[in-house]
Image (cartoon, rainbow, N blue to C red; front, side, top):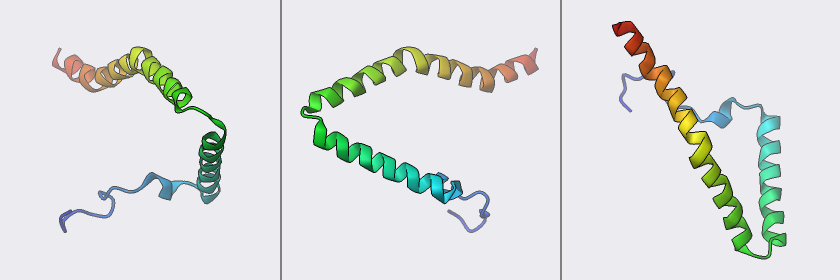
Length: 83
């Protein structure tokens, strides 16, 4: 970054604005979930199947709608102003 940038322009990590209680609670829950999952899930195929099911659903249904909403908010206003 150049010297001209102000502190407000510098990127800030999202966890710095979280309450400490939420941050540490989420960290412990995620750690325990990963540890228990690693101990009790016998086959990695189960994990891959779950990830694949979620990914296919996101690609097929969620992403197209989200991209349409984002593009309509960004570009629709410029089209309306041109008319």
